[in-house]
Length: 414
View (cartoon, rainbow, N blue to C red):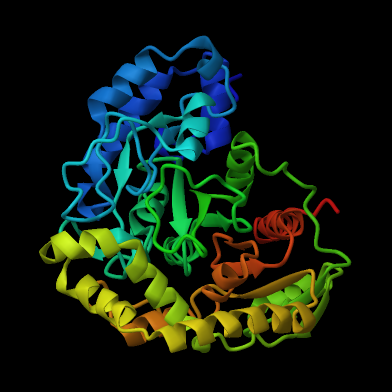
């Protein structure tokens, strides 16, 4: 009797696809062709900036032995269009890089490809990865497959939409203030932002190097854990919640559920970090200093406005914000002495796609996410929209895997 999933290929998990390809039950080419057809079928989502159909089919057809037997054998992979990919254009969601084709591939992308993943295209994002809605003036707005008419989140909105819509089984995103976690929550998938520097950022265009994080996005945390193992940065821990001290930053039904599973649950308060905004704005503007000098007209009016704020930050305000950041780290170390912290990733209603992204909307959607980029602590989103954060990657991932088992109705193993 066949053990293959009784579902269309685009509903199979990374684990199921790879096992079937390794076992010879389905070919990598068949999986790839099915997902490319799915991309065409759901072109209305506008999840991709570039679809690399010919390259993907050729890669799948000629998959070498070490990749055909790898942990991600034949898995359709759609990295955010901010990572360099040799021979496939990398636009960074911008007009300036519209025709940019790198000669090399980002380290993290290459590691997943070496394990058998097949790049089917590059996903849409907010311009230069600065935004929470993926409303891109140059490449169009990404639609939410789970909540039609609502935003897909940002800036990795195309990645989340592609995974949630069954256009790819795996993506790689970036997160500087919530850009993995927000779209994952918006589209009902999982996303993991590890501790600062956990996943290599080489070959990824920066927004704010001191706050940028790279991480996997997939339909489940189990698949994110597999990707982290393949990336060589984190072994899958045993799922666990019992005995953990859990700080609740914002009311959520998960708090009571975790208490019944043996966690010690209590209210916690995330210290305010609004005083750190000058660092965010000024460092983002500094990233673009060379492009700004000669290519200002190639930025959208929205991004010009954002960058102008950063350009106007005074030296005094910037240095004060640096001192405030040091104090903020110290305060959080003292006050957030929990194993994990939980809250809804997006503690407000998901806005409609027709609503313009404003500074006020960004503040409304990111009251918790950006703090963990300033701190460099790991933080993830499970597919029910719960954000789980903490100081240690192994602990955060163990809790996220245990919570996933809980929402699936399975018993937590430890």
